[in-house]
Length: 272
Length: 295
Image 1: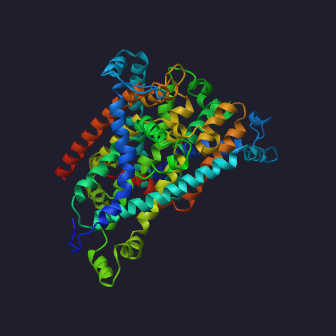
Image 2: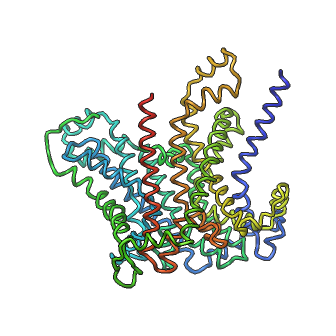
Image 3: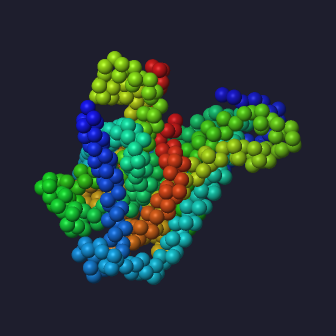
């Protein structure tokens, strides 16, 4: 009995290690290769003295690389701020205010979630072009907020007791005052989850920047990485260094706040 | 729903919902309308669109590239959805069973890393990984008689590889969904089954799977839609090649518009895909509603 249990424990451990390995090996490869110099990239000797930061030096010396990072950070950060602002306000109105067409308008907004962004790149490109917005930050940031954000904020705000809002009103808070002083502090965790979800989505966004930005100085990091692969096909180390720069921000966020992060990403599935 | 009259009917709520409404009407609804309208035209972006009725759709039916893209898209769905569902359920059940162990905690944390990395990163890294002539990788694939560097270049295998990378990339996502379902099954069920003499397998099939049904339906539909939408990963892994072997509808629409300036035609392709997505969403609504009423 005891022996059988030990064997099963051992098998479980091996399986767990297998799961870990499958999920981590390509990233280990990415990190290791990014520390290899161009000449001996393919000798697969990963002893410490063969590793260098040379590739990172090279990508940061590349023209526009600083700009790519700035673009990615700026678009993702502005996207989070914009999404939170418009979604929290609308969520508050839908959850706690009584107005004509409340339910019908909300249903209409939620229905837009069915439209996959990949399906509308061409018309979205045409709209952006007709505004004269190609190669601008506006084009990259303004389409980021989705009905999903409204949905999440509405769900969270619905749970706030109406009495609290009445109390704030009696104490002389206006709608906006109530919103900032009472509502927002009570839905902090949803705000955080939506922020993470939006940040990672915007940071990893690929097809839209690919279409909307043709100028070198407007490109974001994933685009730069994708183009690098064709330009420097022989230089694996350089490509992998760029991949690491791309990968690190979401990864570090994840390490810092795992459960929030999973909640934020998995939220997108548990809608409707 | 709890909603009380505040007494003051004002314009404030409309002001609050205006920004997001403008954004969604302009970018999403506007796009859908333009896509439907221009799907009936010949439009090359440079000159004015010319109405051509159902021409685009008729041409689609005789376009061998479109048919290939359609076939690839459906094949990809057939590869991804069952694998993703089965692997998601098994891995999450295994991880939940081992959640108290240190290794289990670590694995639970690590399966999510591929999910948070960009599809573009995953595509580029897997491409290099398979083509990198890494001795360990070559030996591992050699066990199955496969040369990894030939996988993405072989038009017979490339689509399968793309599908497998997609399953790998999103496994953690489905594990999170299934785990939340698994953790909500009360331990009392399993204890009662144990008293009745049920083994591990019997418990899985008679308790876990039925209790997980709503989650499975949800995850299958998510997996369906996500595999139909897949673009970033394919673009970076194979670029649609070799010889269009991995070109899906989204990729074909993209190259039709931005490669050969056939914007009207590209929108007709997208509209076909959108129709499929809509049908799937409707099916999901119906199935989920029935499931809820059963409970």
